[in-house]
Image (cartoon, rainbow, N blue to C red; front, side):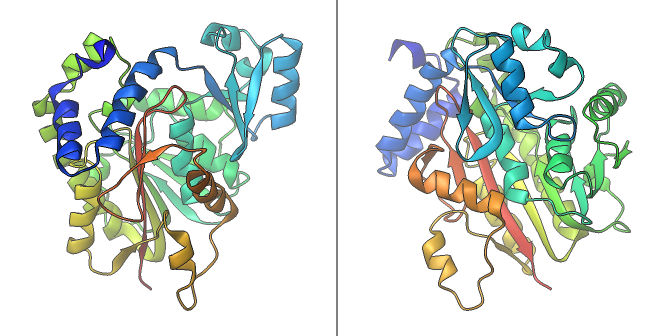
Length: 334
């Protein structure tokens, strides 16, 4: 356990709570995952607004870069252990926007949202634009996307990335999404909320560990609550919201969603686990293909998860390939 002895107190407390609740297996998996994360490989996504996955595979082959494909997402690639990001930066297909470097876990929220062509889609915390461009690609460039970013430098980076990646049907708003005018309404919303980042920790990263302090947790949980309230307010009846964080802390995840559902009684979870029981309900609609692929991968163990205290939501475990991540899908009644 030498690698995990210096885990931040926020994480240690969360793991101790799992131990006390009889979930020692999840706590041990998280500890092991943080140690494995030090050797996490480079992962990327074919940006199909510019290049197909086959074209990306061909470019990697010609450059002599080894890779594996990801069975639950045909546009995702895991590069060989010895490959560094610089090797990808030098590829012409990267320079022209055909490739986007992105963690496997961060690819999940757009897949679960499954943006539809013609839908009004909001990305509440959009910079630097990876998930925004992924949503544009998943909708074939035909969704009406709005991307929020308050800070000018990050908004400029967002605009640059979206232009490079060919995501042109996007309205960028310089606004605090917590105060988004209620005049707006959206069919689908992605809220990848600001968080402590506890899921991204790699063993031995003392700088990141120091940042993950109680003061940060208090700050982000306030923002998360406000963002969730605004998201569920501007969500159209019948619309869907995906809430995600790159954290494993219940205070940022299950507790936030559970409390938001109590405040917004017209909203309910779309189960991402135990689908067999959900699908037996009368009139249950089939999941979109990208969502079904994620659900199937979770049930098969291809996407590693740990126990959640809010059934139907997902806590992705940190491992060598995955960052710790949280996902919940919510539907607003018509």
